[in-house]
Amino acid sequence: MAIKQYFITDEKPQRGLLAAEWVIMGYMVFTLIVMAFLWPRLVNVEPMLMGRLRYVGVTLLMWGVYRYKPCRATMLARIGAQLGFLGWWYPDTYEMNRLLPNLDHVFASLEQSLFGCHPSLLFSQAVPYGWFSELMCMGYVSYFPLIATVTIYYFLKRYEEFQKATFVILASFFIYYVIFVLLPVTGPQFYYLAVGTENIAAGIFSDVGDWFLTHSERLAAPGWSDGFFYHLLEMTHDAGERPTAAFPSSHVGCTTVLMMLALHTRSRRLVLSMLPFYVLMCFSTVYIYAHYVIDAIAGLFTGIMLYYLLTLLYNRYKA
Image (cartoon, rainbow, N blue to C red):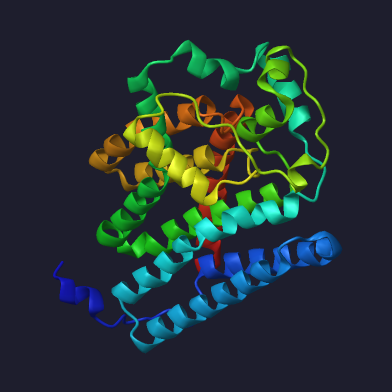
């Protein structure tokens, strides 16, 4: 398709907000209600409120641009703005869930009961090779490129399903964010540091209470610290990682949703190009201390469930 065709005015332009935008607006209302209940204890109220105002402003601006020139290019920009805000919404969950009693000791105990050890602690020790570390780090940082790949594929090749696909992607994220707000589990990289890896190895899982109310330090990822992808991973974590969002793993869950969307296209090339990164993603979340194994397993199953549920909801919404 010639570039100019992306700017041809849509015959039936979307008049109101997109389904994905309504979901995120609903999430914003939900978090405002949570903030109201937690108001006396919230630490960064002004940035949280200003961020929400910016989000509303950008969403309305992009809606206005699309209404002025309803075409594929402005629709892509509209969806791109929503995807761009994901990096802000994620650490925002920490501002609320850190006010709740931490539950890592419960999940760490369950992990020990199921596996007789802590795979997150032992995985990197069992496979200490630099090349393997780089593969794990590469898999983990492929998260946002995979989102972009599926989004652009649907835009270019299956535009008639573009809104549905991006709705499924974005709605999946925000369903996970609701869970993260209400379920304060930080994962190994934060919990192991708080209680000590020697205690984890000995099967001692202390209740740290409100430790993460004032602490956000994390363990450095294991592996080859001079590797390119290792440095890229550390830069990503330094930019937006917080003691939040461990169960279920949204990295595994949302990437599973992306794989299901790729399978739906029946494009062998797309599926095979994504599959190695998907597999690496699933293993890397445990390798780099980001998640317990139970988080990754829960991410896999909830990702499959969300794909089918959200696809069904969208089809009914459009019926």
